[in-house]
Length: 78
Image (cartoon, rainbow, N blue to C red; front, side):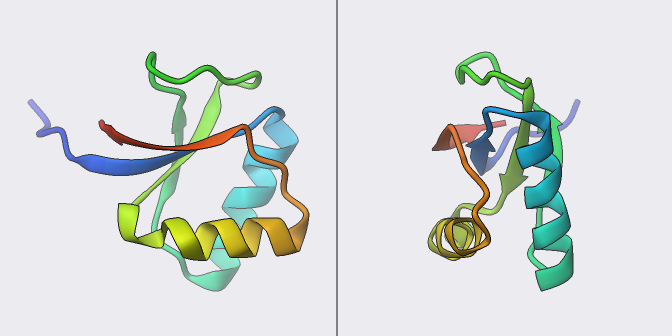
């Protein structure tokens, strides 16, 4: 069984926003991956970006600058 670890989970209102975030993070070389939204989080599209918690500030800045709308940032054991 995979061990749970603390992750930053970024939720989105739309699938397009989730995919835009993935593309942005890949271009910038930021760690993370798209995941299904954990049960503890409500999201309109069902997709979220999972990243190391220490990237929160960096992600907030880059997503805002790129105009990618988020539904929330959460630190969860996933």
